Length: 276
Image (cartoon, rainbow, N blue to C red; front, side):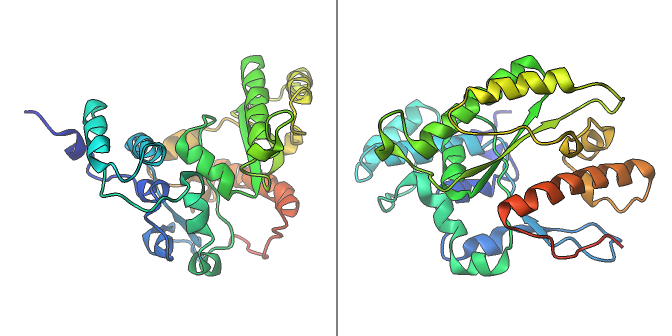
């Protein structure tokens, strides 16, 4: 049985609408999915806009619509068929694709209902990632603590520098001057005691050569490699689990330490929420 490409995924990405600029006028607030954990005395006031594998197609489609004349709908349709992408929607207004996410997040209704927006993006300058940079005030870079990842982080920070500071000698190309690096946090760190000084120094040396001043966060902010993250993937947020087992408490304490460290850097002091 042959299944059409657009029928294989039962639940398309809601993030597609964000990337495509379809969640303006406060619609983001209606689309975001609340997350709670049954049994919590104080429900988490968190909502997400999930993304799935089809987000890549939405990114490509949005970028092509922006780069080619939007009035030539027939040309776009033929090109999308050639690339085996879903046909484009009718021509939209000529808005800059890089700022569609920022427009959605700056809507007064969204601003009034959300205190903090966290955007999770891979370290590739895709359409959605560029939108995230243009909409964000701060940048936190997670990385595995090894030599290969350290080099990749430094190169990524240099890419961010190009968009924040502009290419060398050309400040006119700046697209996200407001973004400020919080630092680099090491993740998947072994839970067994180990001297990480050498690895941290190598990472710091790689970052020292980047154009954008970015520091490695203190070791107490590092995120350890814990099986609970793997076991929770795709089902729930490990941090939100109601279990009071030692493993869950250690995970939550670790995440809280990272949050307590970066919150003042963002001008976002805690509101006294405590787990009960």
